[in-house]
Length: 580
Ligand code: FES
Image (cartoon, rainbow, N blue to C red; front, side, top):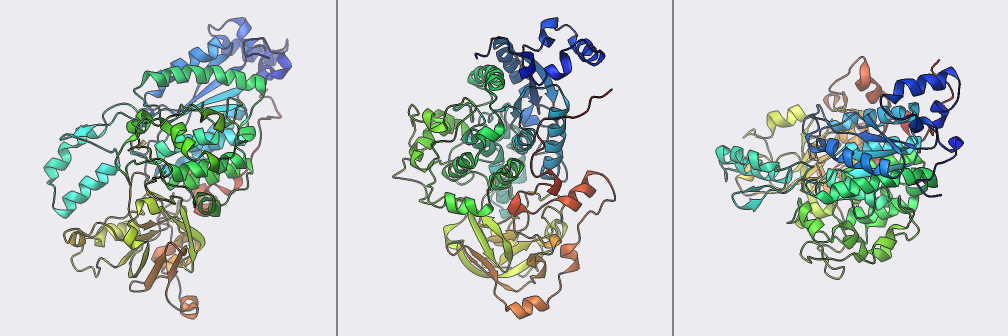
């Protein structure tokens, strides 16, 4: 069946609302028509929801309102009915205390609204960090045909003749101010150049990573992810995406058909080859959990271990997202590692991802390295274990300092983000370049919301001595635009009873990334005899009501994706009762 042929009414989910001579069908049609012709509701045309995270409070996604117009045109052209559906939107730079606290709420709200409405398929418009993960989690749990349209990265701004990596350069420049090599005035002068256009952050941060991972999972039209937000090809792709959504209904192709274990393997290979954000680990685990796909944190290490780092992008490298697009984009990267990909994993088009690699070319070998000359031989996320992190912790070796990957140093403990801010620049703080900075109380329950604070700033007095990286350990996350030798996602977190709460300042900590271990070098007996520091285990906020109450009571740990325990899995698209 082609997409523009009328379909049997019974085949469409939306027809359950609209088709019939009874009072309920009358109500559904009458209230929805508002200028649409009667044949829009005769059960022959799929109703496609444009689930849109455009919001003035999510500046990276603001342009999606315009992009949605092109999706609408594509839906109409293919014989469907496009319907807008605003979604809970999370602006990474604005939302307090951290957008991650609300990712599961956004996913839950979107899931329920997709299920509750007369929808046959969804186009998911996202961009800023948490928006694509929340949309994918929602779509996975409803399992109606779905397709992701990533909003794309911004055009790179320049400051004093050099391109700015949005996010990454904020950290770098602010560290230069703290280290005394840049004035505050010069720092503030860069502000107007940091965000030069519509679109999300232009480094290999979480937004870029999740857009590219959507494509690796098969959930975008191959070749679309990474298209700059300013490029007309994004609108052209949006048109095609709308048309394909109509076809997805006819083909009955659902997220569970696409996001299989094989697709997640491809996503993990991609995450390593692009040097993607560590946040990709938590989000992929959460999405897999919604689908019942057997995926563990250890898979990221096992599958990613032999994958070379091929993309030279900030924060670890030199270039930016518009350079990656110019150099050939994700498909050109994946062609280099085609032998590591699962050939059977299909995309939203119905064709395997690997089918699209034959015509992909690399146009700039500085940005996308040849397989034989990678930036690093093994770029996967390393999963560490030991008496400090029994359920695991992760580190991104590609963003770390090579000389610190095996390191022994004495712990300097901070019990909360406030404690860290209060003491990190204390001239009397006993710390040197070999110290290991430990920040706890920043996990899912403890903060709450597991913020991106794991790359805590280095003490100013060490910056002034020229120190630019130290081993840091945290139960929180790290921004994808950040860098450093940071052990993060420590599980269980301190507030959930993890041994991280037992460490004391001065304890020797041993990091051995090649051996995949993170340990406190004290005896088991001494560790067992200790009580957790109360300040490390108390949740900063202990709300009596609302989302935060629900979140703290039910959120799982980072090693399984930090979803709420009752949201794991799928409920399908069936709604048993009518509203009247
Ligand atoms: Fe939106 Fe970086 S703040 S992607």
